View (cartoon, protein in one colour):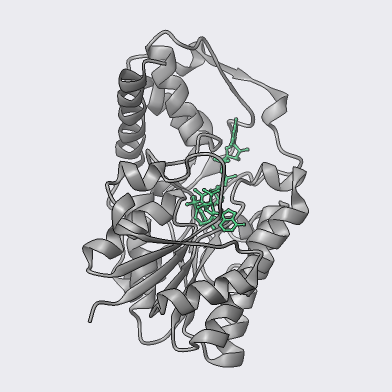
Length: 325
Ligand code: NAP
Ligand code: G4F
């Protein structure tokens, strides 16, 4: 009998890569889908798995829809990837972010506990929880200091995961993932904003790229590598928390340099600093220590930042060639 999995956030970047990975492993994949006006299935389509997943209507803020999804999918594994995940928006919509990203995770944990407490649970935790970093290299023991309403909401979800593990014995694991990107990244995030602009500038469709704090540093990896760590966590006998990162950090400035150089351009000729994109509180630097994931899960990143950015720029160039604008 093949295993069944339920993914919240299946229409997002990670949801699409995880769905593909689980399908390749022979799972029956169910995805919770919040009804939207726009085409939210484009990522699943790009990976060629749109028709292979079963979509269930539901919303993280509606626990009854989550209970119903659990009853329909009867999953052995539940991956809670759904969230209002853009840090910038979390200052303009802090309550929505708290409800979807924070309370939403508790709703999923409750649905698991009520319908099938044996189902294994994965929480998409984040390096944003480290915020104002308390150690030069962050690992599972580094204290948290979130710097955005998003980070605060994720911290609630993280501790709820730990608490349901300790209170009810749920097999509930939290992946503290550092930034991970791909051609399926939303265009509001800085890597994709840059690679999309590089492609448009190269094709003569855009003249400049307006950015905020380009001195910020991030530990960037490839989403396709990171979903393998999520799956590996739920295959362990004991649930636990794991940092998933590359162990190197790079400035937004240097990432821009890589992206522009890939098409033979100099970023300094195009990047304009715009105060509109600065945040009320910044996470200046993130750098993860993935030693526990390496030792416990046998997980290591396979894709360098240069390979990742090249993949994203090439994909954005291809999309422009198809659409023409
Ligand atoms: P993403 O592309 O923004 O995807 C978020 C998903 O959540 C989308 O499918 C979205 O659906 C769904 N969603 C939003 N509000 C919802 C609601 N009320 N009910 C149900 N679903 C809802 O994010 P991602 O990059 O794939 O990240 C996946 C998860 O990992 C997120 O929880 C994120 O916070 C976390 N994370 C990401 C990173 C990273 O660097 N990517 C790092 C650490 C942690 P629509 O498409 O319909 O809006
Ligand atoms: O790409 P970003 O918007 O990602 P951020 O804020 O690090 O959050 C992402 O990673 C988290 C993991 O650490 C996830 F939990 C979260 O869901 C999300 O996926 O911004 C990266 C950096 C920031 O320091 C930002 O201030 O880039 C800086 N930046 C500079 N100019 C910009 C811009 N960010 C964006 N989005 N747009 C700019 O124009």
